[in-house]
Image (cartoon, rainbow, N blue to C red; front, side, top):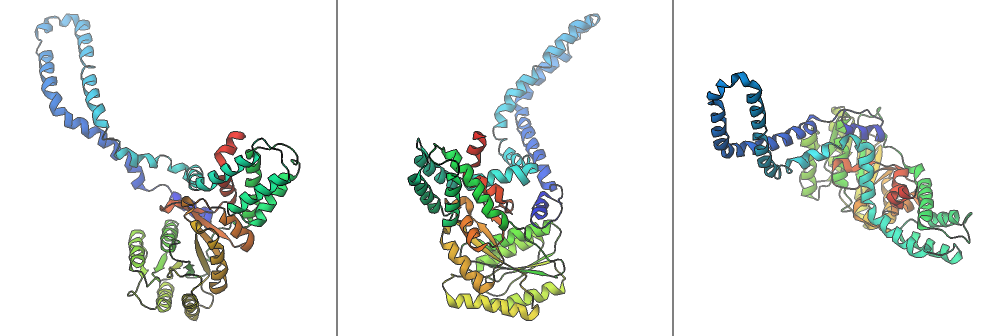
Length: 426
């Protein structure tokens, strides 16, 4: 299994498989790119090399000095290096274009570390705007001051402004006050406590996405407002399921957007998963019913159903979502088995309201938070978890398949608190 299978092991309990051959061949391509440039230079250097080689081969007069083989051998040895320096300078300029293939081979080298190191680097980089904004505020407050009531209030305001939530902010300031009151503290002290309290809040909700093997298929309905990355998230999940050896059927239920349907079709072709689609504007509930019927007939492991983006304050659109669920249950009264709500981290406090509405209407069972790399408001996930305690299955910090990973509470807490600085302090 591929390392993407590593995702399944963490997210679904599956195994791993070796990297795909396409990834191992990249270094060879890069190597060929370096060999080819010298070949292009060869015609220019041959005229010079041939005359030099012929005189060396002609010296039959030196043949008289054959008894003095030691003299001839040193000459050959001294001449042999000459082509090397001549080719070396010629190859060096040609290696300059060579870096173009090398970058493609570059990413292949760290991939073995992707499950831990590479992902954590992407996570800390993605949350850098959140952690930097928080760190700057903390430094300005605690610099050369003793911890008192005024400082605690300022710290609480900063934490609330970072979207961590009132409850989490209060727990952090209470933890800081224990044993540190009326003493000087550093921003590193505050961030260490911050990491501990955030991890404590998130650990109960860091739950892998479980697939019921007894359901054929396990139906996953993906909901959310416009622009939260529903279709992209479905494609990434489908790719990871396929890498783990699961059979997948995709339902293009966003019948209002032609782009969403085409995007899902492209992914379906790429990963070898059938995509059930209808004409633009077709009834989404009917499409979901047909997709479930086909998935059952094919005994597929997973059916992923996309839905149209809808605002949580539009009652007619939310009623349509309820209809999809009712129709699905006519075919399988236990479906959908999982209802995933995708949240855009950049929306901040608005994401809190989305959770409340979609949970009531669609019976949301778990969360996937996307776009953590494009916001300074990553703390909203902490506030949502503290209030709703819904499982957080995965988070995304980019567009690539590997940029969607299982949610790890400790890693997230370290990243949002500024892991690099904390490591230096240790």
